[in-house]
Image (cartoon, rainbow, N blue to C red):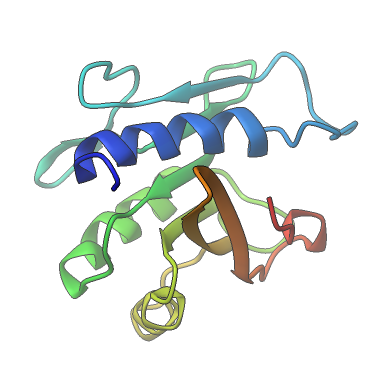
Length: 154
């Protein structure tokens, strides 16, 4: 049995931040970047949107404080998230070709998330599905339109 969704989301965000921003073996990471995690109890960095403040799950800051990357953990995929995804995409930095937004959605919901992203013209660098297997978080890439380096299972 899994904990409540809000607790699980916070745990997933912390694991994603610790293992993918940067990858444990990544040699190209600028160690002066900062990786922040927003949880229910610890809101470290917000982005301002038309409806107020939004606290992305994971935010990577460049040494100058500018947002480089955003990792957003979702507990379900639904059309109501499109506005938030668009805002996060607009607020993040550029990768090689696309905005550095990475979405993490529950296993089996990647196709629907991809449809919503693409039908709404939202730039993103990676779409991942997550699952809990034998007590561990597993992330699987759905699509990585920006950098092949980011296309990893963990």
